[in-house]
Length: 385
Ligand SMILES: [Fe+2]
View 1 (cartoon, rainbow, N blue to C red):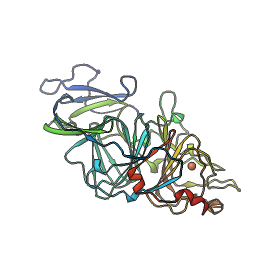
View 2: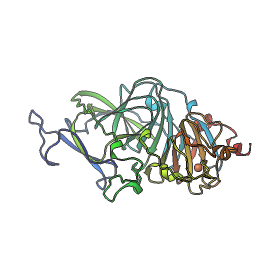
View 3: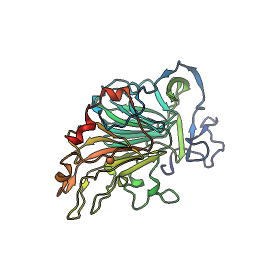
View 4: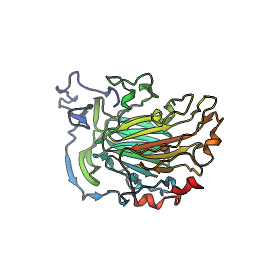
């Protein structure tokens, strides 16, 4: 949950007459992702956000499941996902369950002709390669390498990339993505022991008001279908807003690692949480400083969760043959740990430059047909080499 923010012009009192220079009323919209019972924002539009002029035939974008059940360590070569021109076509779900979809994407072009709204899921977009601007009805957020973009479900947006070489890791979350509860005060401030704080959160800026009439297509995702809905007015016709529900950016490079004399467990890397999964950031840090410490992680049995590690950059102390964009899945139920030789090699090491994103789901993930196309065969036996 981001904190209260306001941008542009808003009336002194909510739900009161707020008039344009010509005397007509602005159209107020309450925007929340959990009914009227949680964080919300109030937006003031030049035109009501309800004026549909036509609709297209829906398109099925449901992920194709290849393996519904399995108990095997898996490894995927994320950068083998082929680049595609269109942002929505480029999104390839690889691991999915009822709580989240983990998606890889290599979009090449800007979303010039349409807008996008995910009505099902909050989106967490991790920028592995590329830069650009996220344009929304709340304003703009510039992004670059290492940024997490958190976009509440229902937010209308366009992504504009600065170049064609873009690599994204996207998590669709079917519940709100929040800061970890353990780092929040009872009233929602990020506490002193949190690895990041409000200053690290980048909120929308540069609110551009497009008071335009025409045919504006919002591709809207709902229950695995993409609906083309055409509106009479530009969706970014907001003159002002305030509240606690809006997109924001947080850079993985601003995550301050928590270290100790001996190996710290994965929860110290936690960055976000949602219902039934968490997201962690592994960032460059000093290793453990007990004179007899073992920096490499111990073997562990994650009985209750599937662990997904997405490798971003740097050296990975616990594994061999790691490539950028690789995804390793260690399912709950069988233990995993460092590769042979990694424990001994780690002793005496002072620091790591690893950069990785981890997603731990509390229910098993399913593999899609795309995941099988980019799979490294034989990974399950790699500890016995
Ligand atoms: Fe693990």
